[in-house]
Length: 598
Image 1: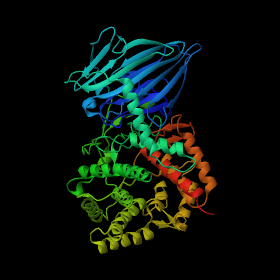
Image 2: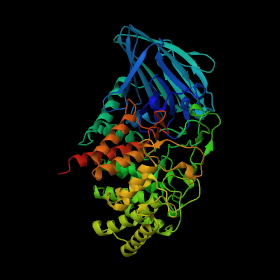
Image 3: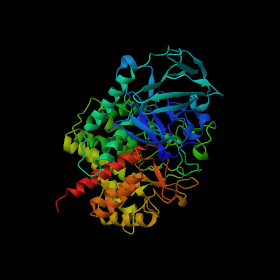
Image 4: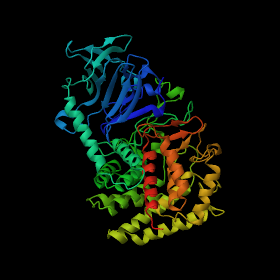
């Protein structure tokens, strides 16, 4: 059985990621890329789906853990009655192409601190989403043991300890004394190539720590939540592919929004919306170059007819993301089906173009210069928005029911035209600005007429329901935070979407999403409410809610998508970009409110 979602920590090399439980078990790792097939998938089942466990043989050993500074080098400290040792887990960042091309590495360094401690190692490699039990052979020597597992196009080698086969898994022990260091080194490589040489672990750990720490040292945040902001921005960077520039929405797939439920989705892809909002958070803290790389990624991904625009792509811009079920996985705590791919890639979500243009406008204001194709790309996106202006959509929440004219989506269409007008008026770019102004004014007239009922913004035209996406309207400049309609909307959200003090996306019982079951509180929505409270003078409530939300993060600062206040458990895919970027925005809003002149 897998650990609780909040019991996992993240390792990353900015290409893929591993989840390590507080009991020393790597239960999730896709190789060689975040959206590749899994080699360890026990988080969606048990050892039969792949796992690499390393923990003291003494069952009474207790653990604590932390990251080594502002890095993704995870230090788990194990203590028994007569010994102390640490495991330093990390994925080499791999900046040297002469060394790292065609391989992915994960190092588990065992460090003796006091006394003598024996660690038990148990390895179950299950390639291709647990559909392939690899052929395994021993290739090393007694002094330099090495195990190689091959299945189809993939090969995985483990160096550093002697292992013995037992029922399609391998087991062994490693003993360290005070001051002794033992390195276990796992390497993925294409099965048609030779086994790459072992890395110099001493060199790689220092290189990896320096890279992450130097990146984190560039972050500027003047506020009480600096530690939370830095860790959140680090997680956003970890979800950004170092080679392609694609930004994944999360590191995992099919972790449930309700334990035992069916709302289990694959989030290892690039949602244009989530990536755009992530970039805004990075831009606000000075990372303009990242925005430039993502703009290049966007140009490659959406090349062709704007009518073929998708709401999500693979990490390198792949378009074919069919959703299918993997019966090999029983699901996290029995939450089935387990899905890969994502059917929402075929949806029309009208807000996406607006999100992208808002972010590219912010990048321009932050100093990102135009490339040969950047403004023509934006003009094409504006044209696409104008051609689809009458079309109802599935909305921000990717409903699988009937499309509607969601108020938030309509506002983001307004934002698309607004940013196009600004590009001409404020930055001297060319375009049919009079037409864009007319479309912007037309959208505002429509929203103010059809998106407001009894002085309150509504979820979609024709309903009296609200949803949490309406909290974003002031963030994109559609209205002031203290607009009377906005204040009335906040009051309705508090009355109908906060049964336990945290914000739900919408009322799931209305049937609008076309799904059965329920879900937890969507963490990003509560952070949006913190920001709304902060900018409207409700500072005490803002701080109280922020304290509660940051308290939901686990011991290494990770947040998943949702939270169940009843069971006190994190839910959904983790770490979730949406949650962490919303945390950063909320912390920034609180910092600005604290420094505002009375």
